[in-house]
Amino acid sequence: MDEGLCPACKRKSLHHCDQGSKLPSLVAFPQQRREEVFQLPLKSASAAAMRSLTDLHDEYDFLDGDDRYRLLIELGRSLDPMPDALKTDATLVRGCSASVWVYPVPQADGALHFLADSNAAITKGIVALVLAAVQDKPAAEVAAMDVAAALAPFDLTRQLSSNRTQGVPNMIALVQDTARRIAAG
Picture 1 (cartoon, helix red, strand yellow):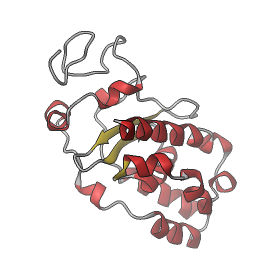
Picture 2 (cartoon, one colour; picture 1 turned 90 degrees about the horizontal axis):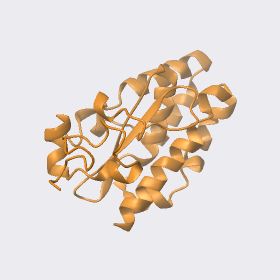
Picture 3 (cartoon, helix red, strand yellow; picture 1 turned 60 degrees about the horizontal axis):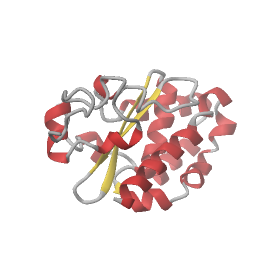
Picture 4 (spheres, helix red, strand yellow; picture 1 turned 90 degrees about the vertical axis):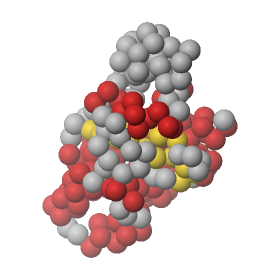
C-alpha cells in the first residue's frame, strides 16, 4: 500500500469511505504527507498562541457567568481550523450533545497536536479548554496525566448545563486512548 492512502479504496484520505478503520487509522498519514493531503500545517500560529490552563483559569475565575460563556466562545474560535475531510464518524466524540470531532497529529518531536471542532460555539470552547491541558505535550505525558483534575478548577459541571459538559469525559478518554496508542508505538 502507498503511504498516506486509504487501505480500502486507495484514495488520499482515510476517512472518506466507510471501510477505513476506526481510531488507529487516524495516525496513519506520515507527517511529511499531512500538510500536502490536508493542506494544513502541522502546527499553526494559533497553536503557538494557546494559553496555559493556569492563565485561562485566572481569567475565567475573575469573570461572571455571561463573560465566562464569551471567554469559552472566544477560546473555541482560537482553535486551529479542522478540514471538513477529517470530520467523520471515526473522529466524532460519542456522548456529546453537540457534534465534536477530534483528530490527533503526532509531531516529529513526539508531541501530540490535536485538531478539533464542534458545531456549537460554547461546546467548541469547552473542547478548546480540554485541548489546552494536552496540546503539544508528549504522548506519554498526555496518556499519564489526570486531565479531569487539571480541568477541575473550572468547575464546569456547576457553571454549565449538563448537556454542555456530558461529553467531556468521553473526549478526555478519546484523547488519552489515542495518546496511549501513539506512546506505545
